Image 1 (cartoon, rainbow over the protein chains, first blue to last red):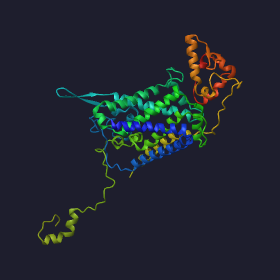
Image 2 (tube, chains in turn green, orange):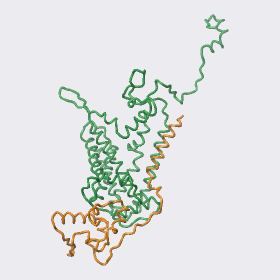
Image 3 (tube, rainbow over the protein chains, first blue to last red):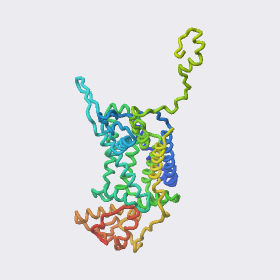
Image 4 (cartoon, rainbow over the protein chains, first blue to last red):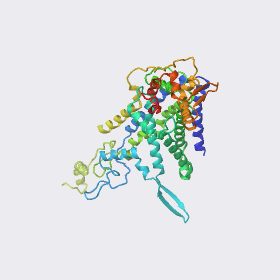
Length: 331
Length: 121
């Protein structure tokens, strides 16, 4: 429990900092202008650093993890997606993982019954909640472009319409708002509820979940319950993207809580597990084709060893060997 | 040595990431202040304070819709005792017409569904 308590306390503290600072100390400029710029620089810089670092790491051999028949003789049917043998098949495998989480679809659960009997069963809940969470997150992030672009692009409006199609509550209820809270709740509960998962869960697993939960809940509050002045919020964001450092008056403190938590998450992103966003594309166990029987992959940093064959050795010492009555191959 | 194709893929991906994150920074034009329209007779007090109405007018309208349509209660009484008929037309007596709403609503991409039935243009 201590592993979950620390992150929880951290998130609460992080949420209180901007609230107190803006409400009582008048530090709007720090939290409205400076922190967001720092956050975006750290986010992009850190992300590029991580990806370039991975790109520079040598991958001398083919190490894909496969679970299908690799390309072999003509009459053996290859599993092209599970054991890709060329670039396009490997690309299809990576993209299907990115968009549909195929590896999570194979998730199983082990249960110990009386007997004792060990039983394995398919368990799709993690896959379902993970997929629901990530897609909601994507839609929510894209929807936020309405605050950053003066003339809101058509795809954002389309997304808002589809997302709010239920048309219940007055600012129309977004489905993704409901889904992301439900999915994150499931992902947290999953870590508490199963002893095996609880054992391997670390503060670094709870912290991003709590952060995302807090960000979503504060955002939902601002949209549906305790309002903030959307016009000032959009003015601020438009000013920021035009590098115009003026802060509009009268934005509620709750907005700064939302913004600050997002900034912290963005800065935390490149240096935590969240960077799997880039890592999924850079994993050699996923993005390589399984063709080491077809093609020889030579380790590029093999030292250049000078090889001396026996024939050369004998050429040098033949006369001496003959005198010593040693057998030689060439007379 | 890394293959050219890998370099193109990795740096192409990074460029795509960079563009997606900084998408808003590339937009054309200067930030311009959307003029907040002023009521016709600013001396008269609205049903709530201006600040409250800027943030939460939709809550007022939503409450009006429910109580007027479902409970037949068509009169809004403010805390200081003034009475208003619960109707968009009441709003428009001071706030002109639908045009009053459009500027900000387009800017914030908040599209109300009031005008599907009321005050069609």
